Length: 221
Image 1: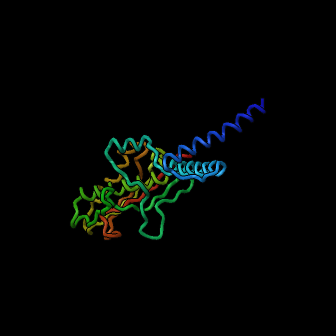
Image 2: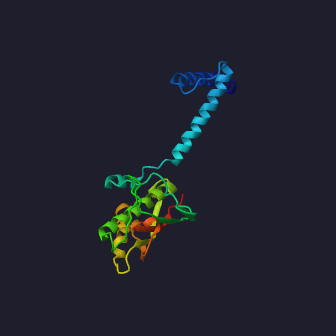
Image 3: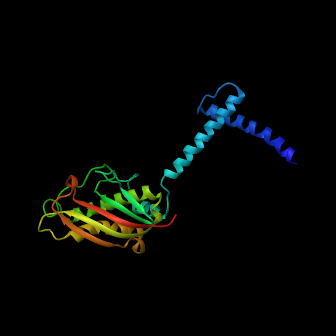
């Protein structure tokens, strides 16, 4: 029996490789060498490379989980990659199942422009709220890039928001609600509700209106 299986295998595999070679050749994917043995070896090499690239692509591509579906329902577009650091740091550091995220700036997803200005001078509370919300949207992009899917977020633990404002401005909490409300809207109360600090600042990097950072608990792999 074993000899029969061995015989069939020895006949089937070269035939399969030949068929695959012809299909790939006809598709224009490559022009293989002329000899049969070289063609088979080349096909194996190309298939191995193709499978490796496919695996890497699957691992790096975001997964359409429940939270991603929720974002689609809400019409919220998030960045396709993690935030780009503006200094000597990284977007996120994971320690165990806790993920510490850097301060995120209010960069619009559509045109990459920044929301700049100072609350109490040239921006309203509503505009500040939108700026904080935009920071939170960028945080979601970093989380997705780090985790593969936002479904792996177990809990938004802590949010810290900074508001670029005048000395007499005292509505920092109302402004940072833009970030807090977004997390609640996307993740729900159980996961999205968090502890928080909202701090006024006389200036922020690049003249931005707000900056938001957070600490997140991540589900075990």
